[in-house]
Length: 136
Length: 193
Image 1 (cartoon, rainbow over the protein chains, first blue to last red):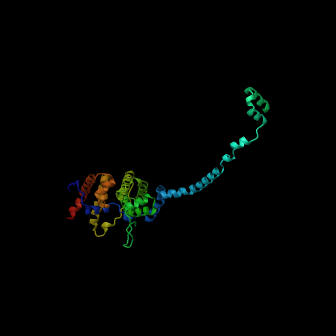
Image 2 (cartoon, chains in turn green, yellow; image 1 turned 90 degrees about the vertical axis):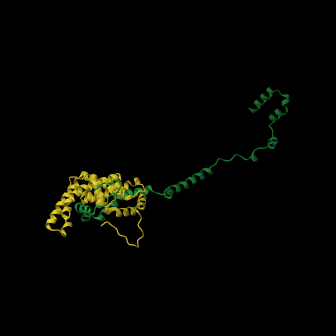
Image 3 (cartoon, each protein chain N blue to C red; image 1 turned 60 degrees about the vertical axis):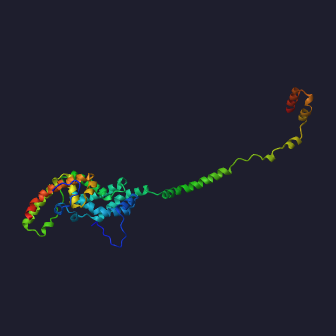
């Protein structure tokens, strides 16, 4: 019998038969297949569940997130509406402010009149003194 | 018996690669199918390696669970069988080493009883004892290689993948093992011719 490193030898039926006879025969000592299946199924369940959890598609992630995300979005929208509804009172419109005509047409106190129209006769110091006394 | 038989009316069963992909996604049915497909052969290999039913059952169970845990290291393009039987054989050989002193179950003595004379029976019984002893004295790798090739029916390439050794090394171990075992069988051959 020569060794051929490049080619598988052919199986030897005679040797195979003797080995079959010598080695333990699994068919003669078959296990309880149903029991073996059941034990395997039971012991594999956890690993399989872990694999299922790892292998979720994007829509499954979306679905998983939808449950907490939808109420959170509703709450955020309500909060936004409340915040927007509480804006500070707007400044008075331009029309409500006194115009130039209102100012010019308003009654002028006597002293201010004197200051405006008799100012020419008073010195600046006198006008200041009179205004101060008038204020008091 | 663990083997399943299919009738022509059934849809074609998915191949191992497809089942492995489904198991990767946690499909328990696909795992059951994979177990069903390989359970018998795995048990046969384990039982012939260990010679003890309970040990072989435990080995098969562990091998499937280890395969499941290591499934992420399995490359989809390769074939599942050799990868799985590597787990069975490696663990079996380790157990064999660890339990080398443990006795095997008594072997059923049914085969030669059919047509043999008492002399012939005694002769065969002696021959078997010698063959069995020679098998036990072979280096572990040679013993496993010759068992996988001559008894379990794996090819040299499959054994190379299972044992994680080059195909040329498998052939060398096979050659050496067969040479040793044939020398044991030679007296029987001479008597028969």
